[in-house]
Length: 158
Image 1: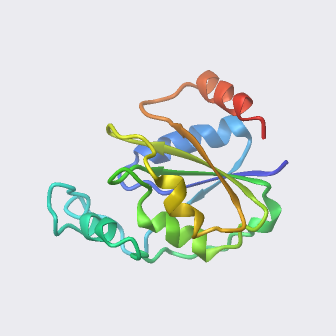
Image 2: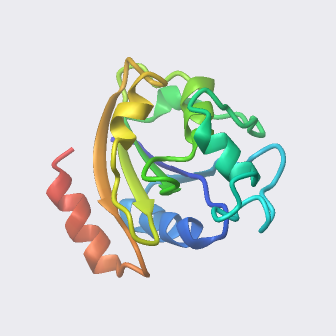
């Protein structure tokens, strides 16, 4: 079974977890990069006019990504990681899912969060990859150990 860890990380927190998960899962690693990188001001959730606030207020927002060659046909399972923004995945994750063909794939979500859970994330992502099976995975906050990640992976039964 061929696996991929794809992730979006605005501040580096999710990136660290994705790198470790990729190693433990023996999976390829793919970074979802915004065409226009996020600045600290863009990420200021206290500012209702910040870029991230405006994107998250508009569920149809699809921030552009730097498209890279990604042959999804060679993967069976995609671990998809992101920070939780406003109780769901950032809309750039919808952009990613709508940019590639995930038909018949199993997508397991993982996230980092300052305090909230997955909320309605699966519901909001399903329409962006309707022919994939999207599973709510786990919040991987802090610095999860390799043994903790292995235990989580074994428990998934995929």
